Amino acid sequence: MTDSLPLILREEPFFDAIEVELPTGVPVVTMEFPEVRLEDLPEIFDGHFHQLAQAAPVGPGFAIYDGDVSDEFDLTIGFPVAGPVEIDGLDNGVFPTGHALIMSHLGGFDGLGSAWEALMERHFAKGGSAPRFVVEIYVTDPSVIAHDDLRTDLLVVL
Image 1: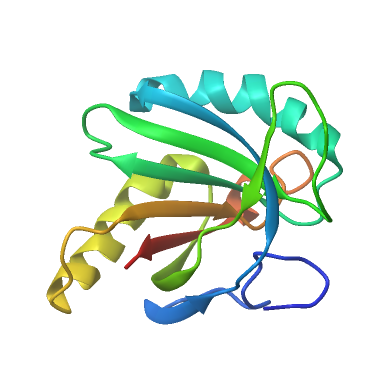
Image 2: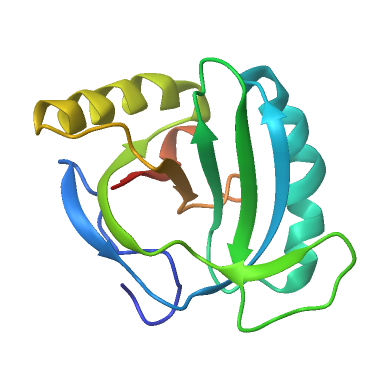
């Protein structure tokens, strides 16, 4: 993990799926959304990441998907922060820890589905069982980086 930006686990992309140990004790602010469907994501991300950004993030945004993303699932979005904040509607916590299989997706968000398919295929080929949950870390900021140059790290939390 780089010292300057929590949740960027290394500067260069993960071109191949590898296992990593997630950092411990990374404070985050989050918002939770139960019973979400994929078609709800643009509205949630566009409508709430700006509210989370009021907490003075110290690293990239993330989303935690818990459940079957082809149906309804629970979603948590957030940012790492220097410490607890008191802003209405935001929850304080820590980023999940443990082992994860990670791979980077380079390009626009519209390609995330096929990137997830490739990562899950590798996960199951290694004998993996259903993950506890999956995480996207938005390493690059879509408000300042060209669509084709975006990097999203995909994590299957084991």
